[in-house]
Structure formats: C-alpha cells, structure tokens
Length: 329
Ligand code: BTX
Image (tube, rainbow, N blue to C red; front, side, top):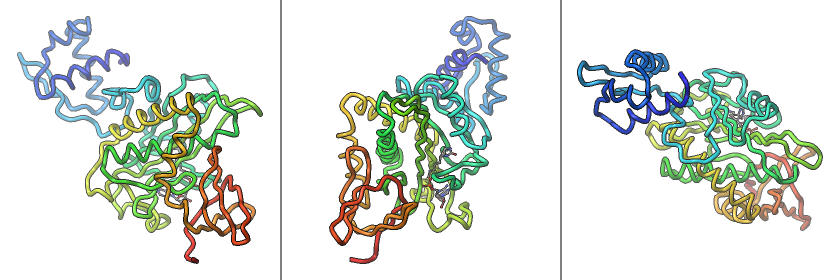
C-alpha cells in the first residue's frame, strides 16, 4: 500500500476513535472505488491491524499491532525531520549496519532505522547489546551535522539528554546519565547509546546514533549475563509502555536540542547534561584501553571530554572509558 494512502486511512480511523467510518466516506477521502477501499483494509489486516466491519456502518480499528512499524511511528508525529522517514524491519543483525548503508546511499537527514529484534546488536568496542524481540526500542538515527568530526561525541551527550527527557515525560521516571553513554535507573542500565560516523579528516558525512532502550522486559527476562546490571522502563514503573509513543517523544526532543546545537553550539546541552549526570563531583575510576585512572570527576569540556583530577592534582582528559564510582573517599 502506498504510504500516503495508508497514512490518510489510519488518520481517519484514529480521528474517529470508537466510531465506524463508512466505506463511502473512505472512498471519497481516498478518491478510490469501494473495491479499492476493501483492498486497503485487507492490507492493514495483513499488517496486524484488527478491523471490525459492520454492514451499513463501516469499519473501525479494534486493535493495533504492538509494533514500532512506520505506520505506528508516523501517526501523530510532530517533528519536521527526525523520524519522517522510517526504515522498519522485523529482524536485523544490527540497525547500525543498515543505517550505515542508507547513509552512504544518501538518504535524508533524520531517517530512522528500527527493528523489533536484533540478532547482533552491538555496543561500544564490539560488545554485545541484547535486543530481544518486541520488547525494546532498537533504532539508529542518521544525522548530517555541519560540525568538525572531533565534535561528534557531543551528539552522544545530546542524545542522552533527549532520551532522559523523553523517558521523564512518558513514564515519570527520572533516569541518570553515566558518562558517556549509559542511562541508568536506580543504578541499573536501561539505555545504551552508540555514536558512529562516516567522515573525512575535516568533514562529517553522517553520524549514526544507535539507541537501545529496554522498555517492556520484565526483570526475569534478562539473561544471566546482564540480569544484575540491567533494568527496563516496565520493570521500574510496573506498567507496559507504548514504544511508538516513546520513540516519537525522543524524536521531538532530539530535534529541538539538535536545532539548538546547530544554532548556538554545545553550551545549553552541556548544562542540561551535567544536571542529569551521576558521576560529576564524585570520586570515580575510569577504565581506559591504556589503563585505569582514579580521581575526582570535575565535569566535561565543551567537546564532551570527561575531566578527572587524580590524587597528585593532575587533570586527565578522558575521551573514552568505562567509569564506575569509587568506594574510596
Ligand atoms: P556499551 O558498550 O556501553 O554497553 C554494552 C554492555 O552493556 C555489554 O557489554 C553488557 O554488559 C551490557 N548490556 C548488553 N545488553 C544490554 C541491555 N539490553 N541492557 C542493559 N545492559 C546491556 C552501549 O554500549 C551502546 C548500545 C547501543 C545499542 C543500540 S541498539 C540500536 C543500535 N544498533 C546496534 O547494533 N547498537 C545500537
């Protein structure tokens, strides 16, 4: 089904809520025959929409698929760019991989790749990201910022702020950020962000922001490997969360922060990020590929680099590390 016809049809059903929409009204609105209307309705059924048809009354939707498909994401979306183009798949190895290919093919900025399940979801340093079917948000967003490549890490922090704000708005929970890319609830990881880019030495072609959110898993659903460190929004709130609504809210938050970032730079995002960060002002251990540094986390620089002062008073600029809070005072 053409996507604009599908969108009009779904909008009609959504606006009419519990009411039936007559076949005649649909055919007038879509400008097609009653037989064509019936075919469109059948297509929606194939996509998992449960539609009730009553003679002389018309059609209404009684159940929507619990999916994050293009249809679900487009309906009611208020952004200008982010999420306006969605590449949806049931199962992929990694949404990052598809997003890299699409970015190279020149798709529009703001295109989102999303899947119900990832078989090789990845974190930083090729670590595994568990992405079971239908329970989480596993997506990659393609941006083309006009900033130097060394500023790309700022987009990880921008995304973290946007995701925290969206989770707050949708669930009422106030998550915290652990530098650089973890979002924690009660000390457990609910979200991971992975930023990758395609760039020359002096120019970014595209930034691929991968976002993994544990949404509707129950605590017992987590595998042994992560059950002690992971949580989900549903496990924390005791309620199932609509993934499409959460994604739409994230798109809106990213879009407004991204506009601010391109116009006025990183300043406001840095301030917001610091208000959500757990580690700033605390004693931490930063494990880098070249060894560990223990000291006081002083803040982040304009470039999103973490500043740690060790016991000799030396200030370290940490570009990439895993951090944990130190128990030493
Ligand atoms: P990270 O390297 O900071 O975190 C990876 C670590 O997190 C793993 O080693 C494991 O200990 C833990 N972990 C794995 N899966 C989960 C999970 N579901 N919940 C909590 N903890 C977990 C974080 O990397 C960046 C993750 C980005 C994932 C997105 S999903 C969409 C996109 N596609 C893709 O392949 N990756 C990104």
